[in-house]
Length: 297
Ligand code: GLU
Image (cartoon, rainbow, N blue to C red):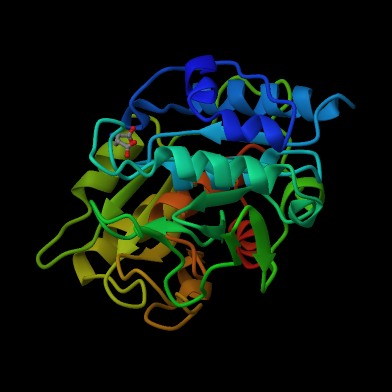
């Protein structure tokens, strides 16, 4: 970590910076256990009056998930910014140094206070709820389809144009202090001729919730529907999300959610729905209450 900071001496003109390494992993190997450790450390650091903001470097594959998790469990208005790089450090034109410089710029700026956990890559500022990796290789991969960037970073200055509208950080009801394990939630994917077998296996192996990455507006085959109805009757919480990358999954739209006690994901992607459901399941498995949570976060 210190090497990374040494490579960009310009950041020392913006802020007093110290680095620490909580984990050194490919972000594909991120776990809920590391998330809980990270949240505890971030909350601890933010309580110190010596810390004005935090930058977290992270692999891009699961960066959006870590950002949204922290957005829900960080108990401070101080800026927390996640940053990554689409090009490797050995590339002819690596984007990591500039992204890191921008992330420090953002975390050190008062304009970032109170805006939830932010994601900064490619000169843009993104809301952790909406941002997603949209391209396997391009530098402008991190975007919020339809809903847009919160702002830009240009010439070392962040410019904001909109605000996150949903509950986050100090307005979030989720507390992970003392939590050592998150409830197990699995995602199952909708496709032609799919069945509920994966959901049933997930429940047999301990899942308390299923996020269905559904067709279109969270739609499902008769076969999946029967399977999920059965699981709901056993107390498993079912969230209907969508494999489509943007738009609202409408309640009682494609499926009668009231009748089957399903929850809809609103605009949350399946992977972010899973995070919100895991946190919700810490305190409730009532689908009405969990639907309230999905409308608010
Ligand atoms: N699998 C790597 C990771 O997400 C991808 C490299 C990267 O984009 O950082 O950790």
